[in-house]
Image 1 (cartoon, rainbow, N blue to C red):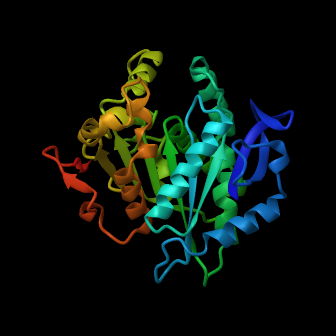
Image 2: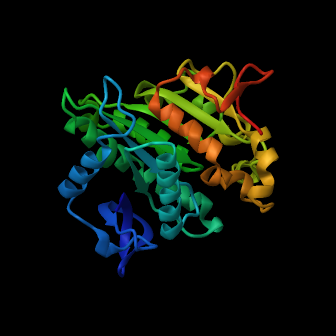
Image 3: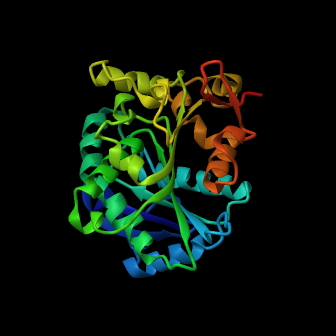
Length: 316
């Protein structure tokens, strides 16, 4: 089964493109799409996720892992499910035995809906924490701690940033102790400045995580278009990286040389520099190393120091 929670309206035996209350689904392996009939009770869904999480990358302090995947804009539900499964399979190939859970926010299946998608993302963002992360934090027991992580692609990074900020503004959530271990952003469609030290847009994000890793690729043409749509003034973190020096909790991982060396594997289309991560074994190994927490950020075999003082995903 694949476990997702969906913040979309009903549309026949499927889901639409408008924001709605959360629905909890368990998708059979035989299904290539997320259907309304896949819904199960919230309590049963959370119980199944917690049970599957026990394993993961256990250490002396924790007993498993949950990775919350948050997709970007212009994603059909079939594509969300396909990429969810790619992440799950790639992490499993690295030895990950926890669970990948996807948050499916309303994203239209059209590049023309970019700005509307961002409005819908902001509307649904709070559900990532209130229906996903925070309840699992409250379900944990002293002798069975589960590490939680967030893996966000493209506009999913915007969803995550807004979700954490919104959660701190809600008394019912802020009153409880909750946090995640690793926040990993790739091809992040958020402004560089919004992730700077002291920026109120990301203060909650940094406060509620142990480490934030930003993977960026200067050859990402989709994010170049994103900057143009936003009047060309806001540099995107997934294209140019974080400002230096980054926040103490943040890690900047340059992926340009790695992508260039392997570009023949991902095609030459305009989206290749934005979506290659899902099919790259080295990137997925790096994600797994970050989730496991067993090595210092500078000691990953998948990384090398750069002349700029940050880290780079190794090229062959």
